[in-house]
Length: 577
Image (cartoon, rainbow, N blue to C red):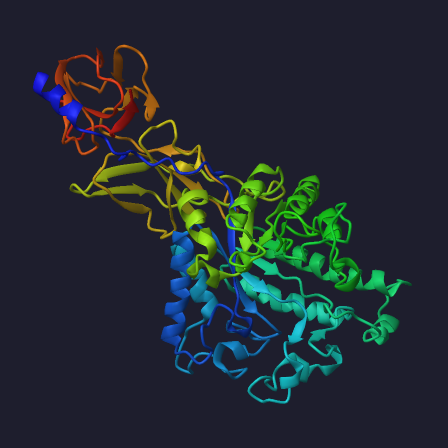
């Protein structure tokens, strides 16, 4: 024993302890816009091969997952065109370089189907991002046959088009236009296994409207006398009809909108900037009051301080969303993180404020390609600190369905490096959450114990590990509401004291563990490293599940215990002296 203590005194622990990631909410929406207009993110080049486009899309999804993102907002309708196989609108110019030309004739590839399946494989939601009104992105190119196909709505229905110097849009005041947009949106909802549909901030143009829609107002005023109120109601009608249509067929599909980040100048007090209410005619407050959206994502693309103070905008929007029982995920300007206007740590400060404010449940970043750039170490901070733990999706209070029954889960160690979990599959489950922890008490209670999200539909999960863990599993319904926690039955001794990762100040260290059925003896080991290369105490005890031991202070210890009628050691617990 004296020689063991001598080894203990000369062996210095240099910090190899179990990680304690930054405290984070268990449920948090962590979204990213994946832009396709003008090939901002994807495809990298519209002339790339299908194989290259698929590989690049997978690269995005892999990168986003490893950095803690759990939702991808994929732009599938940039300008009354399609990044998917649409029966109503032509393939996008930004997909192939010629509008109307999609994948090869002998190809069955659909980018949206592919994106949904690959995102789900990685335990991420996929929201289809649609631009409601923009018809022609660059009118100067309208006469180019490769830019605008004969089947495009600007050519098949010129009477629906409002023309401005910088953009052509569908006329929001026409009932036929609203019906057309609803039909396009609902085709996506019905045919694709998306988790949400997301509309951006392009309503009436940023350049402003004069009298371009005066004839429509004259024909379809619906009793309005003020054309400005009528324009806002045009937008509100579309938002409501899409909401109602989704609820009829797939009420679990989330319906969100990302308006401009400022509601009106001086709202809240001191805020300066563009008046989206009177220029774009978008009224997010009306949508919240009507309950016609599930979440809003105002694009709060500014830093703390100044006339567009992030620190003022977030509490304002949060309070509104909370009042009307809807979710708020602010848009954050990741693309500005490397600029002079954003000091180092700005995005991290914003995330921390989001978490502090009641009524804010996450955020969405613009745009995806910035995750490859790590401006001012922002991505490293997300990955290694703020998003070090996985997170589930916030569940709406107004729409969540019925929780599924918890699964019955079994575990089996497959050699030294693998543990297989198995359960019966519920066909109504969207996915299963696999929890893993050194302690039973943590399982299912915090994001720190979320190990993975199993979406393979096979009712099993293979964990590649040579360590011993406690496991639990929950089932998620389509609304992402969890079942009760199903703890996995284990065949090893469960440690109780000293509590995992705590400090013991008492003169003697109390070691306590659960009694194991039919066990007659227990084998305990205490070491100064988790590989047990430096064992400082070891003993076999007859029919006892507790002991007190004096150990030198100023060290971090690891301990484990095993019953004589089991093959496996307990999970390794650590404590400090």
